[in-house]
Length: 80
Ligand SMILES: [Zn+2]
Image (cartoon, rainbow, N blue to C red; front, top):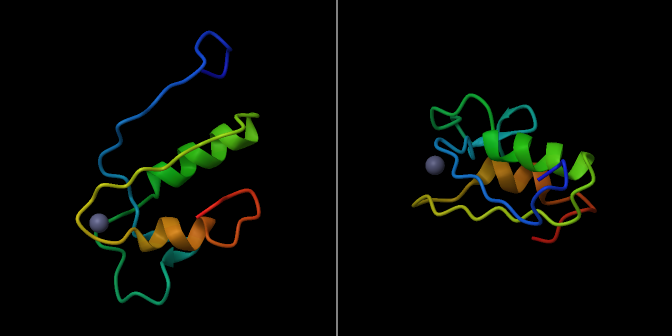
């Protein structure tokens, strides 16, 4: 994708790490839900910083990805 060889790509990431916020536990949650790194956020931010204009995160876990929300909610580059 970054080399320009493809115009679109997707990644299936498990675990997404969606309970990890900016500093660990997100939005005052009592735990990180066994997540160590917010893998989906790391990948999305990396793609954005490499010049990818549009990145979508589709989280189909059964509950709220509070860490991903915390990371991107006030990011002016994102539309939540
Ligand atoms: Zn979860």
